Amino acid sequence: MTEPQPPSPPSLRQIFWVFLVMGGTSIGGGVVGYLRTGLVVRQRWLDDVAFVELLSISQTLPGLNATNMSILVGDRLRGVWGAVVAMLGMCLPGATLMTAAAYAYGIGGDDPWSKAFLHGIAAGAVGLIVVVMVQLGAKVLKTVADYVFVAATAAAVAFFHVPVIYAMLAAGAVAIWWHRPRDKSLK
Amino acid sequence: MKELGDIAGVFAYLSLLTIGGGMAAFPELKTLTVDVHHWVTFPQLLHFYSFGQLAPGPNMMMVASIGAFVAGLPGAAVALVAFFLPTGLLTFAVGRLWTRMSTWRWRPAIQTGLGSAAVGLVLAGAIVMGRGALINVFYIALAVVVFFLLLRTKINPAYPIVASGLIGLVAHAVNL
Image 1 (tube, chains in turn red, cyan):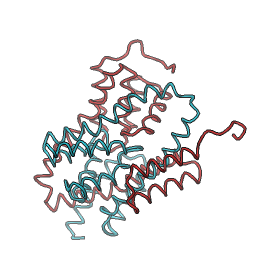
Image 2: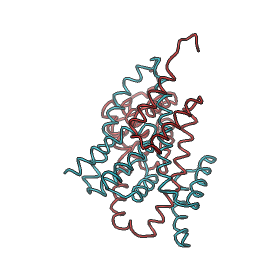
Image 3: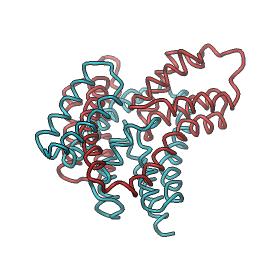
Image 4: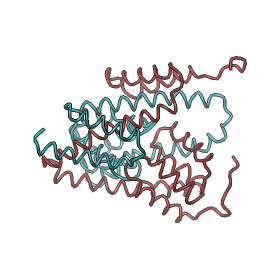
């Protein structure tokens, strides 16, 4: 990989701070958008080509895109410790908030008004998830067979209660085989 | 102590299922935390998950909520480490290898193949969650409106999600 490197890589403290700010401000999901703004546009630690490449690794591997991206970018900038501080910065604000939320919920969670509020949020979140799925699908689904893999995986898990890990391994294996590299003459 | 061990096991396992996003792990999250371990009820899980959508950063920080709800601060810490450390190490290792494998002919096949499985898992998560959250026509309509709003505009998802909560309050006030 050749990519434009800044004259000297940022310090660990800078990396931690930049990721902490992104981890604390990326409200409403879509962390990838915040990552691109922070890393490519503002800091210029990466160019778009490198960003998209790291993002495609993040999406293929288990783990959340936001944390996977933090690890990969941190590693590029400052090796192991860069990855560690980037990941910590990304996670600290949300983790603190959600831990506090659990205590607040223990106190006020049975209140009918907070239940009504949270139930409204849950319905809205279903809409959000379906949008995420449609956008993800638009990027990865190319042939009719891909849609069959999607439907089969979803039905197996949601309706036939197949454990996710088996559904994923089975659907993944068949789909990878379907897209296996062919001889050049066939392309 | 046994509880912390269970939390570690459950969230380490769940983390491996999060291909394509946290939602892919939702059906198994529901099975393990609600049906198997009885740590939370299904409505409570929906509440934590949904509220987690409003928190900044990675969208599965609600694992800390479940850990804290079950076993206090140690529970939150164990859930977070279990959920983020194994996949973190994997990403770190594969990240270094993957760049070297950029010309490997199976790489696009793996990317596309796992991609469709991942979309399927997100769909399954949406179905499982929808069963709990969309309890009548009113909430179905709310989800549909949020869906089209987010699909058609560039609006920050936090706004329609908070608005959904407020609409839930109004629905409660008029006894819908």
